[in-house]
Amino acid sequence: MSVHSTRVRIVGEEYTIRSDVPPEHTRAIAAHVDAAIRKVLESPAITDPGKAAILAAMSITDELFRQREAQDALAEEMRTLSGELRRWLPPGKRGETL
Image: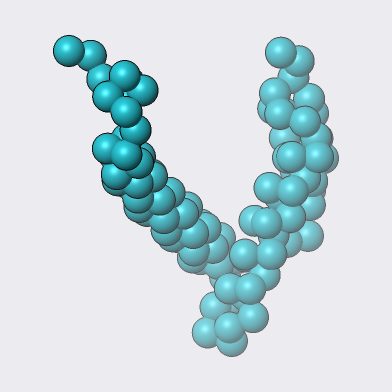
């Protein structure tokens, strides 16, 4: 795996990120973080960039947790459907061991 150095700007500050993911991926992540911080900074109550970064991190983490919950729910639905479909198969095709 090769390590890439990618320059990104987040809320006007430039950072060099070293990572083993493609530079386009790093830039996309930085753009997402930048947008999240800028959205928080739209509130007149938040002017401190440090606080904005913390609130943006919480927002991004909330997105992650919600996606994980949705993925877990979908996986459970798939397991349930798989079990229901398996009952319709002939015994030799069910993948069951006796």
